[in-house]
Length: 114
Image (cartoon, rainbow, N blue to C red; front, side):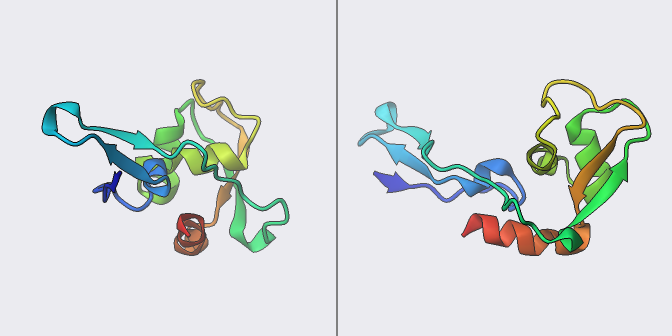
């Protein structure tokens, strides 16, 4: 099995999991994720890492991620911090959610990728 180097930006959920290429010839090659890996944030995450964010309008997680971090790819981090949020429903206006303070985002993403 040959490991594939992903070309995605570092903030993508897919980047955290190892992807492998299986097969010997071009016709029979395919990629698989290591589905045994999981991501979890520590229950005792320092409060300096988390800030409260008030949602101004009805929006999907990708838009919310862009508004906070400048990237649509960090939707999964918002979802993880707010376990009560459903990934397929829009966030209601007036909701106050937890988000990672953008100042500490590189540190947190770096620790997740290790």
